[in-house]
Image (tube, helix red, strand yellow):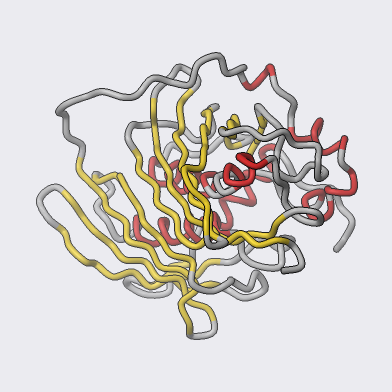
Length: 294
C-alpha cells in the first residue's frame, strides 16, 4: 500500500473508464486489467462489466443490451490481466446473443451470456417506486459514514471510488451490533463524474455498480455485518435486466431485498429507479455466505 487517499470524483471515474477500455487482441478476443490498488481478488462487478464490454463490441451498435446472466467460477487475480473470449451465439433479425468468457491462467474465472435487441415499441408498465425514501441529498455521504468507523476503513480508504454511494439505512460494514435488522437495503448511486454518451458504456457502468451492495441485503434481514464479528461472502452468479434508457452518471435508487437464505447461500434481488421514478433495471444474485472463521 502506498498510503495515498482513495481517488474520487472524475479522477476515479477516469480510472474506471481505463479499466473498462479493453485491448482488442483478436477478432473476438480482448484483454482487460484491474486497478493498481484493490482487494485481494478481482471485484465481481469489474469482471462482469468488462465481459459486457467485450460482448458489446462484437454487436451492431444499433442493438442495445437488455439482459445478462453470469457465473463466477474462480476468484480473479488482480495482479494479472484477464483475457475475454466472445462467442457469437446468434444474430437474428431483432436479437443478438453473445457468450463472453473471462480467462486467467488458462482457466475460466467468469462466464456470461448477454442478449442485445434492436429498439422496439409495445406494451408499457412498471411497478410503483418505493414510497417515502429520502433523496440522495438527505442521506449521509460515504465519507460521512466512513468517518464514524475508521477501523473498518482498511483498503477501502485507498482504492478508487468511482461511484457515489449513499446508504439510506446502515451499511453492512459497520460494527457488529450497530446495524438494525431491515428487510430492505436502499442505496442511492451514481457514477461520480461524467461518462461519454455511449449507451454500452453506461450499461457496463451500471453492471459494475449492481454488484456493490446487492448481496448485503441478505445480511440486512438479520442485522448482520461483513468482516470480524460477522460474515464473509462471495458472488456465485449475477443476472441483470435493462428495462429503459438511463445515464449511470445520474442518481438512481437501488432497492434491494432478500427472499431466501439457506445452506450458506443467500439470494438477493434489486430494482433500480431514476430520481424521477423510472424503473431502469432489475438484478438478481446468489452468494456464498459464511461466518468469519468458519
